[in-house]
Length: 127
Image (cartoon, rainbow, N blue to C red):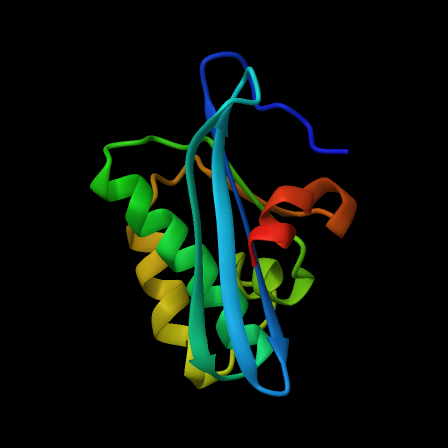
């Protein structure tokens, strides 16, 4: 189940899908009441799941920046992207620049964590 963020904060959840190399992304920013502040969904064309997941996170962060929304946490159901973002694993070169830009879009105290699909349901459905 999705967990509400701390009182007065915002949480970004993103997800992506890749079926036969056709990719789509989706995400949502919600407040501590669970109210939707921003939601997005779009087609990405061809690619793989890692690229799609990284691009979904990137779009979500760009939308937050554009709207002056300060998030306190991000949740993804891609353990691979979370570990690459947190410098636990080396990312493939195809997404390295995306992850680097994502880090530039957030403050250092923003947490990014892995959640199972059940906790990322709305973002999953948008993707």
